[in-house]
Length: 303
Image (spheres, rainbow, N blue to C red):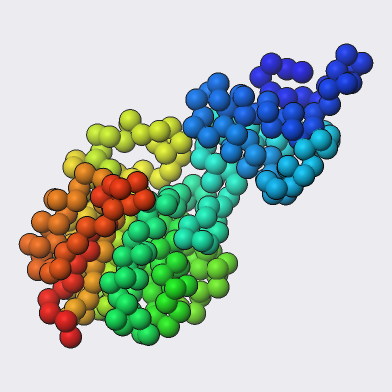
């Protein structure tokens, strides 16, 4: 057995210790732990289940099954990718968000639980008109917010806007996979440019909001793999947030709602932007870690 990665044992000395599922999982978890992986056992299990086209429950049930050479080879390659810092979601090609499984790759930002409150705010603040409406999702990325909202509000029509063509294609793939092609359209362009002259009852946005100077200090799996355009929000992180808030009024119906995801320390500044732009009933929602995450408000007076 090589010191760096598992290989099928050879010779009589190793014949009594085959590479079973249990043994290779322990080896991989120990290896990840030594490399300061924050979730060594979970990553080891997810990667092995992926290599075996199985699930984590089956790993427990078949813990003593010996792996074939081809299975070990596939697992070694996945371990190599994770060692390099590649996000687990990119390796697996999927990520769960709001109870839905999204296809993900390096074309788009990995959906995160921190963004789920954006969907919750959008649903809460449009509950009075839940039977019909028009929604716009800016900086849609994988399409996770637009699709999650559309699944909860199937009678609404949702437009998802994305500046990068390749990312818009990823969003459209998820629209088709998750069965919302009738209610979600994907447009390519800068923020509101693809929907010039149109108005919506709801606008949501998860723009890049990390200050440029903080990008280098991000974890390697974010900094080196996820698209910088989806992370970098300018000098103070609010370049795109300012544009969204300033331009939203031209694209909202009277009483329309704007909801924007922000960084954990940008709540007060973003609330002020909303209020200066004429939004009322401006509120701040925290994420599951009790950090400031979504600012929302209503434009003008209700219809």
